[in-house]
Length: 361
Image 1: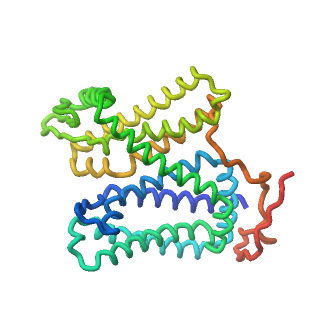
Image 2: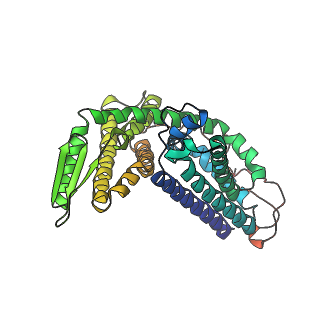
Image 3: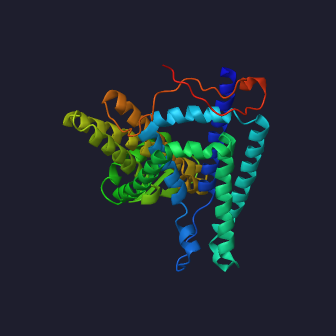
């Protein structure tokens, strides 16, 4: 049975890695078209399409933060649901997912083209693009566990998902707000330390203007990278401050002011270090190819790293400072091993019996 559970876990890990790679590919390869002056619904959607993966990552991490205990219990059940799916069916859904993603990538290349406004039936292209995105996600979900059981699963975590979605939206807005700090004095220490790091690892470092960093390797031409607020990474500050604020508010009766200030300072320093390393890496990439550096700056990789770092900081703070963020405890008693059927899934027989969960008491 444990070997079977490991195979199910391996499927989930493989799918998670595949989805992560697909996200990075799309966000680093395509940019939202400008389409200035066009006020059609499809033009507004395409102009703001970059916010979709931005929000998706934040909502996922927010859901994990505020309801990890509940999620852990539901993931166990979902893995048991996954055991009801034959390997052949799993491979079929994975194939459908890959085909749907290829269609999504091709259609993204069409709708993110600046000349799309000159195409005929633009709205139809956009609808196909939206449909391919839904199909990509749906087939990935079908590969996790049978679609017939989605209603049960989503019904139990619907409140958690709504809360995570709302917090994801809030994280996006707060992150956009904190990016504006790049226009003022908080930019200066970051530019200075990145320039100093470049001076250590490169032949020469440059800071020719307020928003431009550059470096030169021996025997090569210098490379310069203009860093706008949207590419600065300062959205990480808003992200960590928002979730820390939630935790501090929930534990305000037992968390003293000195410990709170220490926690905020530590978290801000960790996030600032990640931002510095990201900008340093982007300039090094620009020494090889400026286009690749710009693509990397526009990808969601930095946002994913900031979200994972925030999750790690919250976990450390919950154990070290007693910070409490989770608002969704388990809905009932912890469950023991669920009996899917009278026969073990390792026997290779199709599982037809419903899930029956027994208490561990």
